[in-house]
Amino acid sequence: MFNSFGNILKLTTFGESHGTAIGGIIDGFPAGIKVDFEAIQNELDRRKPGQSKIVTQRKEPDTVEFMSGIFEGVTTGTSIGFIIKNTNQKSKDYNHNTDVYRPSHADYTYDKKYGIRDHRGGGRTSARETANWVVAGALAKQLISHIEINAFTSSVGEVFMVKPYQDLDFTKTETNIVRCPDEATAEQMIEKIHEIRKAGDTIGGTITCVAQNVPIGLGEPIFNKLHAQLGQAMLSINAVKGFEFGSGFCGAKMRGSEHNDAFLADGTTQSNLSGGIQGGISNGMDIYFRVAFKPVATIMQHQETINAAGEATSIQGRGRHDPCVVPRAVPIVEAMTALVLADFYLLNKMRRTQ
Image 1 (cartoon, rainbow, N blue to C red):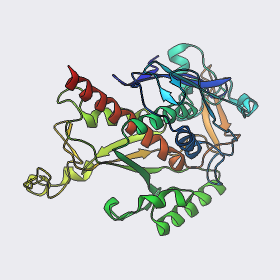
Image 2: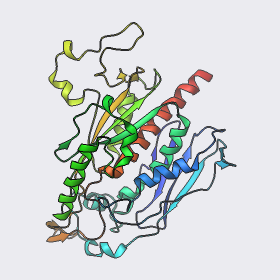
Image 3: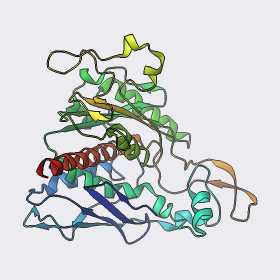
Image 4: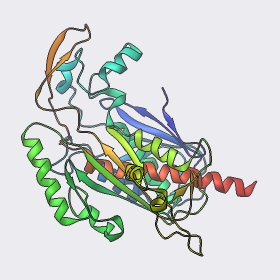
């Protein structure tokens, strides 16, 4: 299994949703960086379950314990090891699907690939794994503190925030439980999620992310393009079904005369339909992209399916699950963005010292 992400800055993770703990090892993190542990825990608190009425009510403190690579609050340049203990598993909630495949989950494919699977919460395929990414991403944010990364919920179902990100106050993202910086739209989103939850169903949505103050020159021109690595990072997140940056799919409807970013004397451009990346390399403008999340696959309704023997059966979701994963995924999107940008930042720094 591919359990590592990154090149110069590399995260390798382990653990299952209902195991003793999850955790990871971060290699390539420079020495001499003073660590803000409170900021790291704050990022985990943004992702953790049980934080509001519109997310899963599993109660996990998600407290990270660092085992190595940090001495007296400063990184040493060696591998940073950490764990997050699981404390609130209810494995019995999954006894009904020991040999039954849940629709749109990884149950079937995982079982066929490995011949064995942990049916408790999806095991290794569970989104609980993303807590590891948030720890690493929080450290990456401190490494590239000059870059501002802000993600927010931009749609839930058919409820869209129509304001452009330039008109938003990102400090308002955390003022509501759906993490939308526009108050009026946030209220509609919350109402929609409540409606869906009462029906025993789930709903998807999108997250928009904006990275500002990104230096020129991050990314490679061929197989390691900046937007390609961002896309890989986002598409690695559970439930993600789509990624677009800059003008995205809307750009496919435009003419070149409409879409081209005309240069100004200082090298910036009149528009930024390129999304801050040209030729796979950052151009110093804002990088912005959107990530699409499908509805959570576990629903509290009867569904037709099959079991491990290929026999027809039915299943109904039990336990604690998100009616909409989008609000809790906001810090995950930020974390993965930080890991990609920090990795390229270190690559450029290494080149300058050669």
